[in-house]
Amino acid sequence: MPTPTMEDYIEQIYILMETKGYARVSAIAEALQVQPSSVTKMVQKLDKDNYLNYEKYQGLILTAKGKKIGQRLVYRHELLEQFLKIIGVDDENIYTDVEGIEHHLSWNSIDRIGDVVQYFEENPKRVEQLSILREKSE
Image (cartoon, one colour):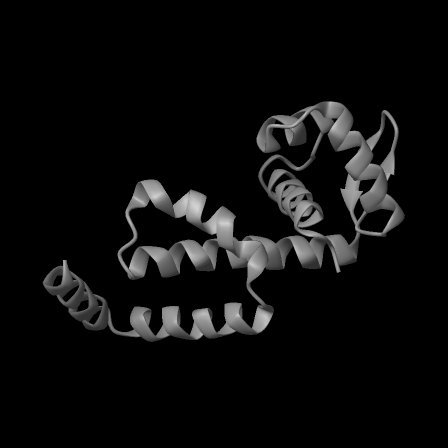
């Protein structure tokens, strides 16, 4: 299992590969707000652990294992954003809150949150009722 830091890198590499078709050390460093040398060290570790293939000066590509994990990490992030939005968390707090909790939840918890999101999305009236309940408690 990847560490939370490894997850951040895999997730960001996956996003870059999906949006740009490639992921360069400089783009990863910029996105994660770290030094390129830190990215190089982590990329080498991810290569050693078979999450990606890295060739110095050639770039990198995610392995099937890395793509699967990356896809799941992006899903987790987006699902938590949806969940926080549904329960009424202020937009300016959502990203920071997701970053703070995403590595601390089990996949079982993520799946149950997915069930809750699906429950609310299946009937928008439920979201409306939750919003009314929240307003009453404020």
